Image (tube, rainbow, N blue to C red; front, side):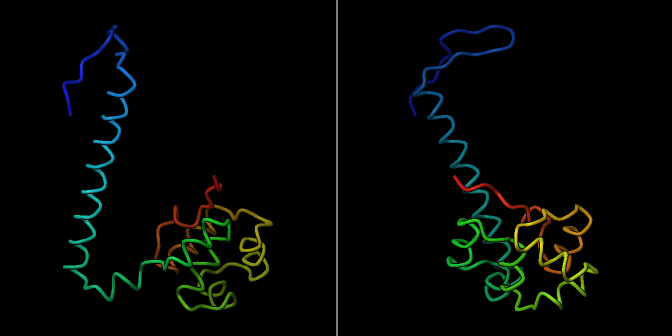
Length: 132
């Protein structure tokens, strides 16, 4: 990376060339990617590859999420659970779970927390993200 210097500065802002700004973003992404890979390697060393793979979605499952399928359904099926079993273990009404999985209801925060706990994932993993 070449020297990056501001074009203008105020007490609250710094103006950079677009190329410098993009270079800084790329460098930050590279640092974050290296940190994520290092954390992944540490997890494999601690838990073993088979355990880590069991907690990782397949490419097909990731594609289903990207296409807008319910994260609750994808994770439930990944864990090999029936909807009835998940509902019972999470103490969520089976009809309500069906509405969440069908996209008819977003699910309350309390229900999503219980579902995430049973599925052994972070609640954020159940929050649908809009497709680009």
